[in-house]
Length: 229
Image 1: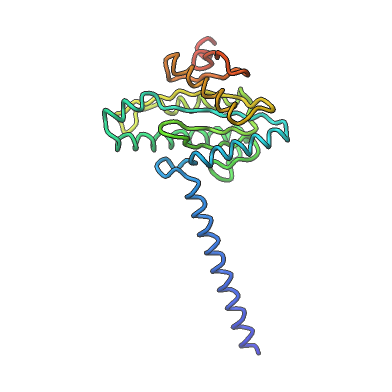
Image 2: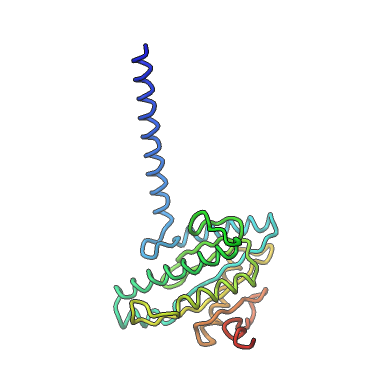
């Protein structure tokens, strides 16, 4: 009887171990399916689904929500000049710098406590970062005011321009920000951020613009605002 019990216990432990391995494998596959493999950021579908979920949460809670649209300046010219392999390296390096700046902001927003996992959305305005196509990306900032989003976007802009990529490619980024207006659609929110991004490009690139509530003309917010102080 003791031998049978021991054998049954061993079989149970082996089954639990296999189930744990299977679950871990499923989770790895799910994470890979959410990712843009070149930049290791969330892919378009995943980040837009996150925007939708955070919009619904903001509707329930009344908390602030901002998104930032990022577009690498003159990327197509760099791609044509240096080739697609260099362009891919620039995209991957760009994503790493943006994630580094976001991790810093997450820590600052959480009062110095490290986030439990990179890009985890939760309390204290933790961010998520995704590629929506080509050289355009979205930063999702739950529980974040417009002022906080501006601080975050400017930190990202400075991180990108701080030093050349691969030691020779000077890269800049233009950023458009929109703060969620209660009741608006995800499409409207992204559209206003896109208009702000267009304004940043039109004003000379390498700067941050903020959308107005109605999506109309927007003002330069950074770095010009800092220069005036």
